[in-house]
Length: 197
Image 1 (cartoon, rainbow, N blue to C red):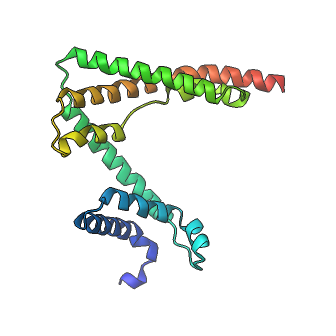
Image 2: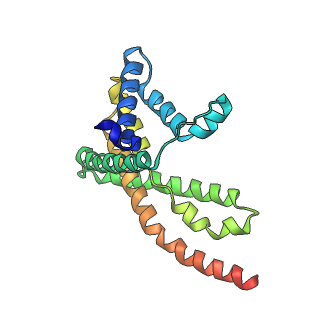
Image 3: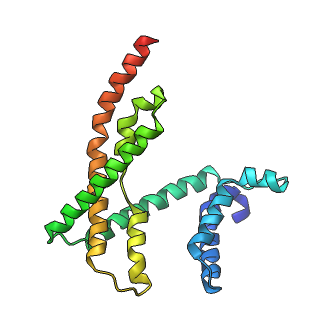
């Protein structure tokens, strides 16, 4: 029965199985399961180029079914991730929210300066400076790193996680609200550039 089905049918499940096996083997021998999964994804996503470098005649690459499966898994993880953030965050202390807003403001200023410096002599990129500046939301990486001290048994203040979650929430809000403002100025700037041409 399995042979009658196209081989792409089980690509997504087989990929997940191989990742879990690689993760388990890597962790059991004292390595990093996350890094092995990352390397597997890099090899799979760049199969054509890697096959060309290694002179393999039949390249292995991610099919559209696997990419669709990856987007579904990403959606599922993001949903659980933000639910988890909501569970661990305590709203009681207003100082933590203010501190998170302050850190987000510093990130926004540093990003603004970096964008200005990167687009200094490029008028085309300069049109989208506003949207590039507000695209600063923190997310999964920040939350995962904030969990590391507790994972390793280090004695860190409990408010550290709350501050990180506050930065994530405020930066997502700034990015969501700020995304609409540069669109208006960007459209005006684009119309000015096209009129000159």
